[in-house]
Image (tube, rainbow, N blue to C red; front, side):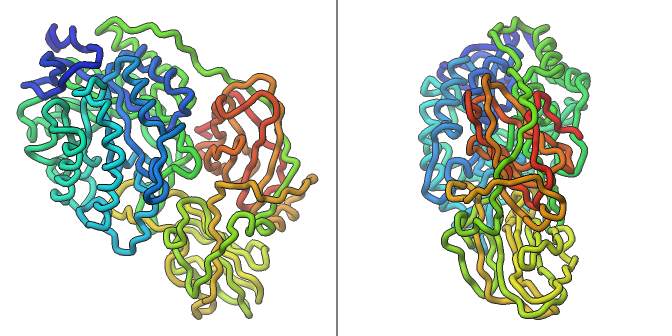
Length: 604
């Protein structure tokens, strides 16, 4: 059983002076402490909801909060940094300290997290032969520049300086990556202590799966403390792997999974409550420390959801990162939350902040009264198309996310073939849809009936966030052939779809299926009057695939194959009075309505 002293210091307040490794526990100001931590990623939760979330974490008995830091959110283009609004890391850390949380930060630079490119910025892939997650200078030079901006922001929040940060992770599950470059890990460690000070008053650590191979490759012996991660199950056997490599010191499960991730076209993942409680109790009685990954999942806003896979295989993640977590995507206290809270309540007295589930509203049917054809608005979306003999990747075109339209003219019909496409290619001749070629079936050909303007609209479904093949460029990669001959003379339009201000709208009447197919990819706009704002969920049932904006904010992708149907619209994005909703539908639609519901559907 955990000793009495450990119990008494289980929920010590922050703003202390040092956090170190003891014989069998962590030490906060030289006193044993057991960490019960909640993963809460600031970039996935609307910033107006951060404070409410911290209160709910405290009420559930958490004494620590953990977050990744998403490099691609803070440096979307090289040398251009963003730390405001949803990226206000300083505010997030200050709020954590306000509610007496110790803080674990995981700055990557690679974070996985089911996030686009594992948090790495797309522009790294402009370099043809870059070796990410290694000591390759083409990678380490921008990493070093990024750390020179990021780490000084963290420094005032270190435990040494009166802040909450007690632990800083070096890389992320590096043992799952084949490079196994210890020089790279050492460089990250050296940068960390250069900017944050020697890790004698805080702890640097690594996290890997509980296998010898993963820990051996991912650890940085003699410098960072080695920890493991695992879900519900036999904690003793899995922590024994960690103990093999760290014979002295606290046990730690750095990612304890109370849920799991989803992929498009697959079933929504759910995790039973009792095994979570059983494993919690097992770890607690061992005196082990753990971090719920994730306690609140939130949302992969815009085009920021990642993908698993590699090569032709792609398993893209949906917009919702609900994760079957204790707090729902909208921040609601689930039965799982209550069970975890009640279990921890057996071990200590819990705070009682006044918190509620978020208010929900069903605003009913919304009608899209205006349409803007993609074909008629290409110039409004990209005023300077790129011309080249052969197709260029998204990265070479300087496009981060979204779509590329590849256009050329052909003088005859025939069999069209793409060497490689990442990820989905919609083929049109004179704006008439001919067929779809996907990453997983690039051997599929499309028959082109004759001469005309050939358009290939390529959609990125999110860069790989995990695995050996993460150097995942998007667009048409290689040649396009017609009857075996290479097509040349391409015009490429970059459709990042961030700015729709120049789009020309036209009134739309009821459409039929034939007219929708003829219209093709298009934006649809609706104006909705709202008297009282609340959280809501926009339901695109009957549509096919695209993404939706609420008052100019990209909520994320929808794809009615599931498991997710509705998209979460947090109340702070709405306003009393007129609200604008815009949907970009890739295939065109004869359905001109959606609904704003009070129930989220992520398991259809």
